[in-house]
Image (tube, rainbow, N blue to C red; front, side, top):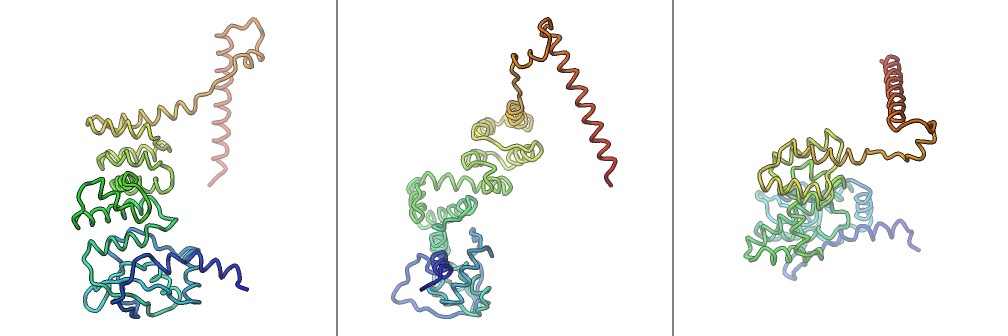
Length: 302
């Protein structure tokens, strides 16, 4: 009876081992020293030494590489990896010196399409990875003669089962500066907000980033839409950005007190003005006391 750990290794490593690019009958599988491999130019997908990679390494040690990678000549007897970056890394970690591959002559656009399609169906892909991958495939297909933006976007999304509109939204994210795109990956910014902010100039995006970091805030979809409109009208500036963001922060910190509950602490004869004066006096005393305590605490530290 097979152990659960063995079953897990086989299942979680399936995509890494088998890929999705078809192999023709004329092509031969050859074993190539992994020291001759080069990473695909601008490869947009992460190759992490995480738990899933370790599972793949264990599978490679036990079963070998069940589906060869695809490479193309790089010059001087070396090769550029088109499909199989994770398998390549798994071979390295497993201590293997060679990896089975198919050597295929192909132009840049064909190689780009294969590289994206063999990776895009993974479940753990970040928005930033999809953004750059879809952009690369979109541009490659345009070079190959695909006509019509919507039609090309639909074709780009076919391998992942995504609509042309979804592809276009991901491609827009590639126009974000890297830190804002990181925030989309970390879910500090929604994809919709990121898409809208992508229409801002680089300088305007840097203003937004500075405001977010300084005020410890995020940007809502509605606020991003406002910034996009101001940018389009060439009226966006740092003052507007801070005003919009801080307005939300002030609204979030607004405190509403029950008049009935507050009144229960005062004699019936007290007027509204007298009640407010007492409250503010007590709050001021509390603030001074708090400040004094913080100073005393700070004096005890080195």
